[in-house]
Image 1 (spheres, rainbow, N blue to C red):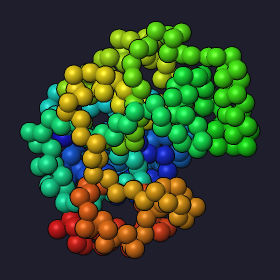
Image 2: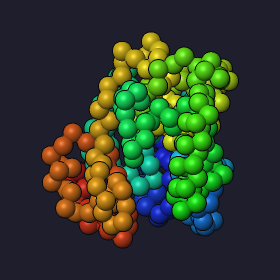
Image 3: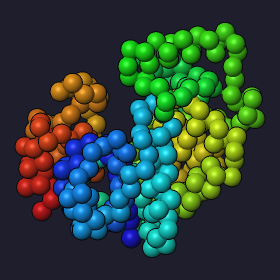
Image 4: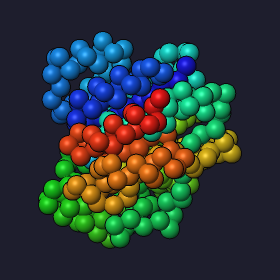
Length: 290
């Protein structure tokens, strides 16, 4: 048995349609952002579909809360001893291969499909990604995307640089830092390992829970510094358009992406928005989910 873990924060009608489709083949675990307004009728629809639904974390971009939502889903899925493989997607994703094809690809497969790039030497938005975990941040309380949040971020980086802050030394963490997308496909034994490791190492918990965008670091770092490293494959089989479109980055997809999706080795694609992606979903359903 395999499970799809869905981290959702909006467009609940799409999440319902997605869950209804996935339940034909998978167990489905969903965390919905606590801020998201979900009606009783919508929640009942999800329960009636057979999804396991949670809404306990107020998810804030850049904060630990995104990773905490994922931890809840991993923990709940692990309670089902029959689940052998877990797939993490967002609530804006959609499968782009027949579900049976996706399922069979992972049956008796112990590979870990997760992006893991060294943080050392990697720069995003003009910032060393190592600093995102080396320094202290608290974006579960401060909105990083506001004007104040942007100014605060620059001030925090400058201040901690001048003070020579180094959480790695302070906490005694000697792991080499890795980063990558938080959308992944992982067998049960690897999930059990990184969940136990995180629970048992208080210094590692504090490192990531006080970092910036730690949802893209914690699993990668734990697994790459373990015996599981040899089983990691960086192909996550996701179609993501790294451009700005419909005021979103990465892009919200429309029907123009269908030829690329159909031709590629993709299993899921993102982002789907009901306003712009309806035609694309119809094309995928008609041609790829037969």
